[in-house]
Image (cartoon, rainbow, N blue to C red; front, side):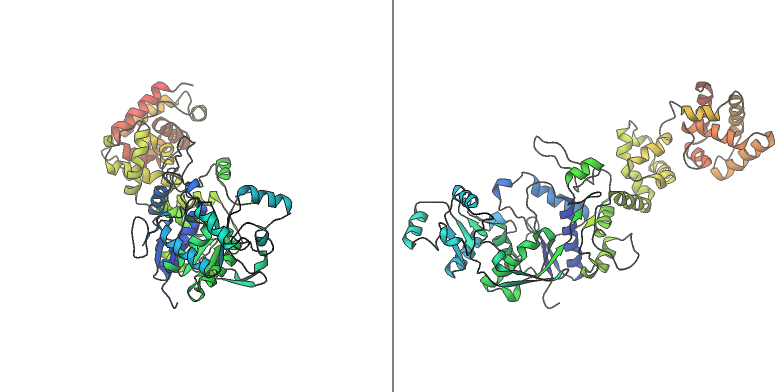
Amino acid sequence: MDRKVRVRFAPSPTGPLHIGGVRTALYNYLFARKHGGDMILRIEDTDSHRFVPGAEEYINEALAWLGIGIDEGVREGGAYGPYKQSERRNIYREHVKMLLDAGKAYIAFDTPAELEAKRAEIPNFQYDASTRDSMRNSLSLPAEEVKRLIDEGTQYVVRFKIEPGIDVVVNDLLRGEVKINSSVLDDKVLYKSADDLPTYHLANIVDDHLMEVSHVIRGEEWLPSAPLHVLLYEAFGWSDTAPAFVHLPLLLKPDGKGKLSKRDGDRLGFPVFPLEWHPEGGEVSSGYRESGYLPEAVVNFLALLGWNPGDDSEIMSMAELIEKFDFGHCSKSGAKFDFEKGRWFNHEYLQKLPDERLASLFKPVLAANGVNPDDFTDDYIARAVGMVKGRIYFVKDLWDQAKFFFKAPEAYNPKDVKKRWNEDTPRIMGELVEVLRGMADFSSAAAEPVVLEWIASKGYHLGNVMNAFRLTVVGECKGPHMFDITELLGKDETISRINKGVEVITL
C-alpha cells in the first residue's frame, strides 16, 4: 500500500456499544494490525441531545476487555487530536467557512415548522436544487437580509450545495464500484448554529482527512451516505487523499428477518452488548463479560460473522485472526447471529484454559454459593474443575458439575434412589466402607482394582454397587470417574459420605 494504514472506530456516546459495533471495531483493528497500521478511537459526540453519561467510559472499557488495542484516542492521546468531536469546534468552523467562501455550501434559515409545511405541500419533499430557491436561505435571500438575520442571532444551518445530474462513484473494497446520480441526494445539513456543532457528514470528512485516515471501515447502513462524502472530499479538493471505503454487512436476527436488536437478545436469552449496561434509572442490560464469556471467545465468534479465513479454521487467537484477515473473504450479505455458536466458542475456549486459571475464575462462584474458597487449596480446586470442565459452557456451570467436591450431599436424587437403592444396599455399603478403610493407598489407580475385585469376589452386581457408591458420595448418579472423585475427596470424607448416605437414604 502506498500510504500508511490508519483506521478509525468512531462510536457515538449515546448508550452501550452494540455487538455489531464491536465487530466493526474488531475488523478495523484486525486490518490495521495486519498492515502494520494505526487504530484510532474517535468519539462522535456532536449530537448533544443524545449524549448519555457513562457511555464513553463504557466504550473504552469494552474495547480494552476484548483486547482491541487503541493507538490514538481520548485516553491515549496522539498527534492528531483532539479525538472528541465536541472539542474540535474551531476546526469545523474553519471548514464550514471554506465551503461557504467557495460557494459549495449555503446558509438556510428555514424553521422546523416551515420545513414541515413544505413536506405537507410537496409529496416526497427534498431540500435540493429543485426546491432550494423557494426556501429561506442565502441563495434565495438578498445578502443584506442574510446578514441581518445572522446579526440578530437567528438560528440557521449550513447545507451542502449539491449540483444535480452528476454520477458519483464510490469505490468500495468489498462491494466494488457503487454509482449513484447526485440528483437523488438532498442538500444535507453540515452545521447547526444552535449548538455550534457540525453534523456527522461534515465532522467525519474533516476528521478523517486531518487524521490521515486511509480506510473507512463501517457498517453497510452508512453506504447511502458514501456518495455525499465523495462529493464533500471533492468540494474540499481532497479527492487524491480520500480514504478507501469498506461497508460491512449487517448482523441479522438469529431467526426471521432484519437487523439484530436488543429485543432479540431479550427474547432468546443472549447478550447484545459486550459489558453489562446500567442506565440511570433504567433496566440493566446483560453483557457478554458478566454472562461468563471469555473475551477471546467473543472475538473469535464475532470475527467469523461475515468473514472466513479461507480455510477450515474455526478456533483462532487474535494473532491468528490478524494474520489471516482479508476483506477478500468478507461476505457482502448479512450474517445471522448464531448465539448458540457463540456458546460453543466459549465452551471450546474454556477447555483450553489451564485448570489453575479456570480455578481462579471459579472462586467467586464458590463464594457466591456459600463456600469459602480459602478452605480449599488451589491445587484441590484446580483438580476438581479439571475433572468436570468438559461439560461446561460457562464458568458458572462449574458449580452444578462440581459442587459435591465442596459440599457433602444434603439430599439425594429421588429417581436415582428409586433405581439404585434396595434393602440390601445399606449392608453392601457398610462392607464397602470396611474395604476402603483398609486401603493404605487411596489413589484412583490403587483403589479401583481393589474395589472391583471385592465386588467380583462377592458376586455383587457391578452397576448396582458402583451407582449406590456414587449416589452416597455425589448425591446423584452423575459425575467424572468415581475413583478420581474419591482420590480427591480423601478416605475420611469418602467414608463419612457413605455412612451418612446409609443413615439418611430410605426407600
